Amino acid sequence: MTASHTPILAYDSSDEYRPEPAPEPQAPAWRDGRVRIGIHTSIAQGFASSLESARKLGCNALQIFSASPRMWPRVGARIPEMDAADFRAKRAELGLGPLVIHANYLINLATADPVMRVRSIQAFHDEIVRAVALGADYLVVHPGSSRAKTPEQAIRDVAQAIRQAARGVRLCAKFGDLRDCRLRVLLENTSGMGATIGSRFEELKAIIEAARELPLGVCLDTAHAFHAGYDIRSEAGLAQSIAALDRTVGLSRVAVLHVNDSKTPFASRVDRHEHIGRGKIGLEAFRRILNHPSLSASSSAGCPGRAFILETPIDAPGDDRRNVRRLWELVGIAVKQAPRAQNGFSMFSRNRRGARASQRNEKSAKPSRNPERASKG
Image (cartoon, rainbow, N blue to C red; front, top):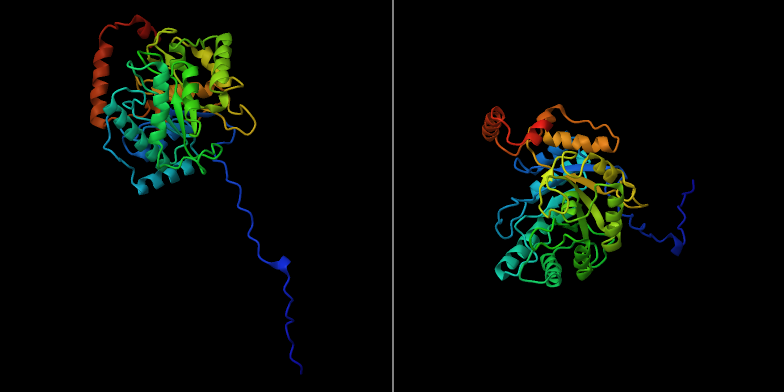
């Protein structure tokens, strides 16, 4: 009986292990070319509750604050990693996106007051850190205002303030490589009240060009544009406004639209939002906006659709539900809303809601002082 021997193979350099190339990064699930409609939801009951509110209202995108919008949070205010991880997991489970975070209203990146400037930069830095922790796609901020500076000086200061606020936070995979960024800062156009910066598209362009190394873009607010003199009511006016936007900042930089009707007339420079179709812009104008080939979901090859985010008021129970449904109807899609969303969702406690309901009942018993509002119901 002869023993069998396993032959020893000669070394062949072609057999040497070679690691497979790194997989291409996967685009977020929400970048599927579908229309994305969302609304600003409350975090008063916790971050996760904002996701549930958006889902029950029939949204597939949402906007939130990461802290109180009208108070200065303590310096370095952070979200516990466990809470942030739970939020990210829940959002992935529900398939909601993009996630837009709106920065604190008190932040003024254009101010000439040195104390206010330091405070604003620190607060915006904290906004960026919290947005990254929550896995947000976009962080929206108002450029600010300053009566003590020329617009050119204010624009330079806004760009520098954003640059300072972003220090120490990795927004992109590689510094200056704007193709692969996990968070983009969006400058919101303003109504032009007082000495605010950003009511003209040229000013937004100038801020972006002054900070080219940062992932900056634009959030277009329909009401603000209307207040600032862009007549988006008519088909011709909308075409002219979109052309002006593309000529200045470029449509590729417009990632989010705040979809709001206006209580105040054209070019009023007074910022007052109204329910979709009940204001001075009108329902047919919003039909054109949501279905415009330059603004719709599949606007260009390889680009995700823009998110249409509502910031409409809550004057009566169910207002959020009705505004969300109206946007879906304008794009020709029937939306499924949870029955419990019949009366919308409130950031107030039960006792507070009861008190507000009593106040509304008392008001409804009195003769209306606004015949126009009374006729609309």
